[in-house]
Amino acid sequence: DGGITQSPKYLFRKEGQNVTLSCEQNLNHDAMYWYRQDPGQGLRLIYYSQIVNDFQKGDIAEGYSVSREKKESFPLTVTSAQKNPTAFYLCASSIFSLAGLSTNEQFFGPGTRLTVL
Amino acid sequence: GENVEQHPSTLSVQEGDSAVIKCTYSDSASNYFPWYKQELGKRPQLIIDIRSNVGEKKDQRIAVTLNKTAKHFSLHITETQPEDSAVYFCAALSGGYQKVTFGTGTKLQVIP
Figure 1 (cartoon, chains in turn orange, red):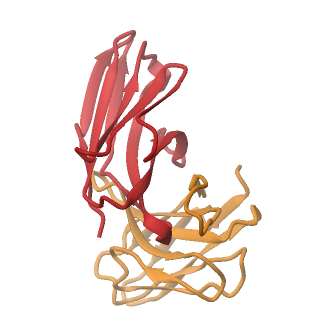
Figure 2: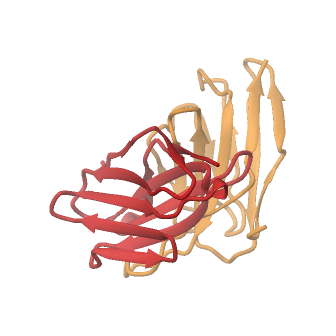
């Protein structure tokens, strides 16, 4: 399935708790991304990382945190500061070219559906 | 930052007819424009893409056109089939930062 996995598939959390979503890829891709998908709002970028030990905020980073200690892994933590965390979360990866000429096809994981109770 | 607008949000066509989805972008530095298809319950997958130095690209029943001056690009699906029913997302890549901004999606329904 494209070499990118997410776990768990479904996650339930009580209000006030932090939770971490896993994303792993074996495609040897440098760039990784986290998106949030809500009905009618498309894919909104939370965080992205171009190389190990570096990441950038996306459009809706508040209440989320990430780390990129290994090339293969890009976990996302949903903190208690995120006011409306119930959503479908998608992780993606792609190659990264400084020349900017190569394709930036993103390969998506199967997603994690987070529900806050 | 980049802003991508996509229209329409829903589209119903009869099987065999054509479907057109339109997107506009704001950042003139954007140079790569992919289209993704997301079937119900599945992950998005790339169906076609176009670079800023190309005006049109075709792949069987799917084509994408790009107008850099007007900052808009469109997806054209001809001879639609029921399996084309899905949500389609356009996107734009801004410069060297590898940040991809997605449109809000179009739900296409092909009626048999």
